[in-house]
Length: 342
Image (cartoon, rainbow, N blue to C red):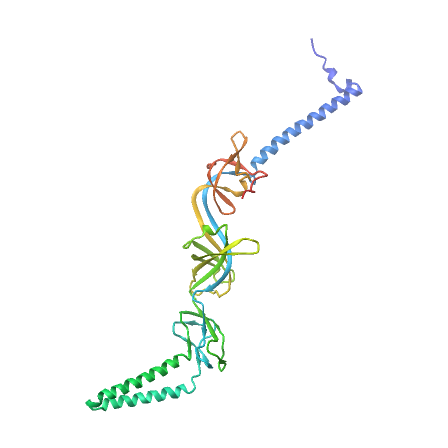
């Protein structure tokens, strides 16, 4: 017996039946579309490289950063040792000097005559000594030594009229001009190294225990030429300085050598990055894939997700080391709670 398919023809339906028929058709289409969209959205979410990451091994470096001002090593302010009038200035700011080079010379006035007189007395004593008979040679020898001591004394006084560099380096500032009257003890010039610099910056109490003497530091000085330098931590000041916010900081000093012909000056601002930990060939994932509860959302081969607890190692503020809980090849996804862990 054949079924009467004509009964399924909407033309044979009553008005009410037609309405019900079309409602069923529309609802069915909506349900099918929603199912297809859900499947597509799910697949697209996993295929979106912004949200999915395949775990791999790599290298990671943890750094402590900060900023400070740099200054040359052995920066020294030279002072006048006599009161008097400047005679001449041998070097200007930017000039290279060696140990003992005279930067500023003061007028010696009557000291020139005093030295001339002492030198003549010495010359006379030398003549008398050379011509003295044997029985008077001892007295002549004493007179010669006395004359020599006077010459040496005047020459020592002369040295006080010269302000000289104690280091090999550069003149950073000359504070006097020729014919200027200066009192003993006043500043006349500033000198310092032109081959080695230092920079001091403050480190938060949360990170100071990661800093140690001898660690490598990368220094960026945007106004210098070149702009990149590498140095070493040479000193930690463990006397804390507590700010008004209640955070205690500690001073860290870094020393770095300058390449030949470098253009860098006292007081330039520097950004510092100290490498405190470095690991190679470890499991590394982006930091924003770690959930706030210390888990990572892993996707298995069937597409199911599972939150897995992980042990986090060092961080470079973009990526973190995973000590345990994940292995290379695992697929993880970023969720709404990812990237908010401390």
